[in-house]
Image 1 (spheres, one colour):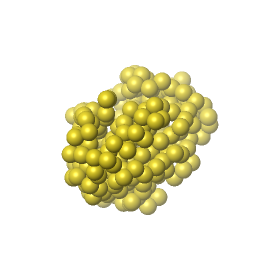
Image 2 (cartoon, rainbow, N blue to C red; image 1 turned 180 degrees about the horizontal axis):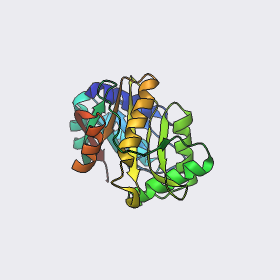
Image 3 (spheres, rainbow, N blue to C red; image 1 turned 90 degrees about the vertical axis):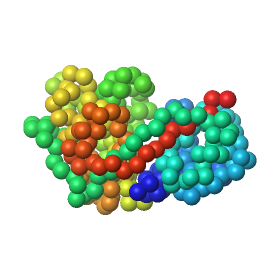
Image 4 (cartoon, helix red, strand yellow; image 1 turned 45 degrees about the horizontal axis):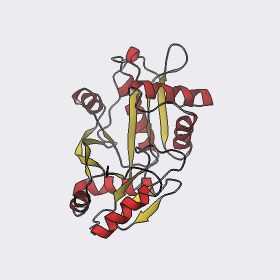
Length: 250
């Protein structure tokens, strides 16, 4: 499964508008944003980069005024992490991920929660705004953020949300288009006033079901704590492995 998730990461980054290959790495640059969570690199499975390859990777980021950053499953490219650390990359985070299959997927138990697909520009703006708030303002809502959500929905992935009482968004998430038989579910967020009502579980189950209907063999996601892990496990996600996030501040 490590290799499946890492192969997905490579294919996913190659979809970026200015993606490129550097040594044994793929870098997913998007000129529309300087966000390090959009502009990052990942090694191809089995890569054994040299110190020169890593130096070229750093330069590719620096020439664009960006912080060199990677996300990957280390077991899929055992030779990558030692080379990166020799060059001064440090750990930003380590996240476990969970995997769901059509056989393990179960319906969410949040009775009365209606999950929708966005249709209008206002829907996409509401989802982008709500997710920004749900994640504590880690990124500001923006027209570019709403546009990225629309591109996800129209590009073979899916965006789903639960409508708030005022017609906006109570909570939502997105799932990438499948690649290498799997898809990444991300950005699961619920506004504080709507937490504890089954919104996250309902959205997660709806997205996984949508991607399975489109041919994905698995859907995977990362989780941030025991509470969110329980939500995902209730709808059929099971332990899959670990991904590491590295960055270079030099």
